[in-house]
Length: 132
Length: 132
DNA sequence: CGGTATCCAGAGCGATACTG
DNA sequence: CAGTATCGCTCTGGATACCG
Image (tube, rainbow over all chains, first blue to last red; front, side, top):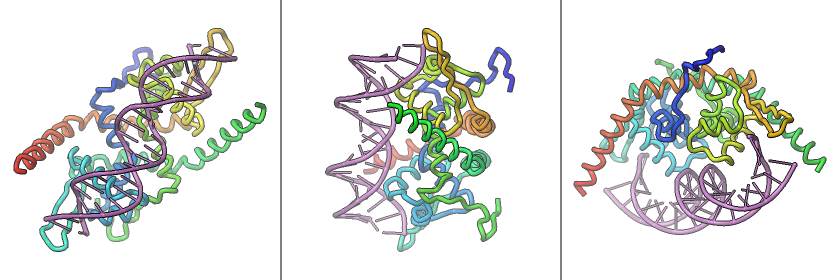
């Protein structure tokens, strides 16, 4: 990992930077889950809600709207009774597949190490506190 | 992308799931930026603060602590006056490199498409609103 | 320099009720 | 079924002041 002196890769960390805004969006609490679920197949609103433990109706709606706005998810309303609305990834949304898999894979592989690190840190903290 | 009926890949979306907790952590607003910056080289507290536009002292401290707790970042205090504290990635933190690059790369490549999609969506919204 | 402690405003989010 | 609307709380995170 030797980048030399010039740091050829340096990404713009300014607040108004496009990349940062999009990153904040994609990496938010629910979006990753929604995208990951839609990667296998098209799903209805209620199916998504059932799959994602802990999400409220409101937050699912909000999340889906912003994903739709960003062109990552396509919303299809079927004019039937009762209403049937289906969500699926757009081609653009599909291009996130590999990246998200990579992130999830990483957490799966390293969760044990992280748990150990946390426990060790907490013990050190507790010891330090015990010394007053 | 045909997974068949069985959905061989299905990740646990329960709230208490380890993977989700770690994902929420790594994917938060500031952590990605800090990790990405430390990928090139070790940095001091003030250097990090200067690099990351918009972060408060408090949030930088909080972010660094949680990354340290998770074993992703190592904190080194040099006993000199004035104090000198340096942060660097641990080997575990270093394993995130490829994944984060992949995410950043994705946003860089697709930011234009997303901007276009957003603009189009907003126009549709405005039109719909105009119809009352 | 590199923090910690305290306070507080505002966004985020859940709960609830209502609708086409 | 798939939302929208409203309310109210929580919790993030900024501002400020102080410390080793």
